[in-house]
Length: 360
Image (cartoon, rainbow, N blue to C red; front, side):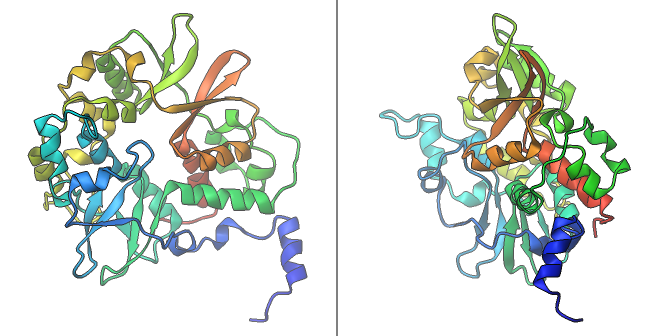
């Protein structure tokens, strides 16, 4: 094959014939080779003592002797078990016990992973199936090649936007209609505004109990609820993460470990209760925080954007935020919907499907 002239390449880019998403052949085109890992010899206190639980992501737990990945310390587990009196003058006995426990007691198995030959679409579907925030990539010998996170997909979208910087008149287009359009039409004619890609938002009054919020999450199959203040306005949200972080009684680690370390499922598949969605985990909690008003738990970072805001700006703000960010999409003073990283991943997933990729 003859080498392509640079001038021809840029002409293709300018005319949108570059085939950007078609060039994403495997997960290795997206992978981050800087894999966050921690030794299984460390204890929980050493791990959480140097991290912000709200902004942290999942990490791989490795055997320091052979560098093999033995499991994942996922974000949700840390949030459930995080000591409530850490670095205070008086620490409760249960907090002190948890701080001294080995990380192997918190490990979730099996590891969400794909081979280096997997498609990006396969990774997106694993995100959804496992409800995880990272997927590891390793070869047959289980040598870790890298990790993929939702932000890696967002960064790829920003590269696309930077290459295809032309601005065309906006047209109203819902995400559900994307499979009827060609790839260039999606980016240059539709799915360009917050309104096009937002999800519906379920609401709850700030005086309602957290228990009611968890039920609402379950009923609406969401992890984000808009919180109504005394004036009936939505200015904040409550998320499953807010509930996890606020729990005042740490999880029974022995029960957690028994669930996490089950081996009666296939490698890469979900296991036990930890594989359930967040609202299912929360609904089983008897923590006193469940009887607190919703407003007392609000902590997730929220930004308000107009419904006509371009998706490119939404992606940019998500990447710049050090914490999870939820967008309330407004038209005037009315909240029309909500956007999280998951909604942006839906765009990417749709684009890959339109491009003709399978999951294998």
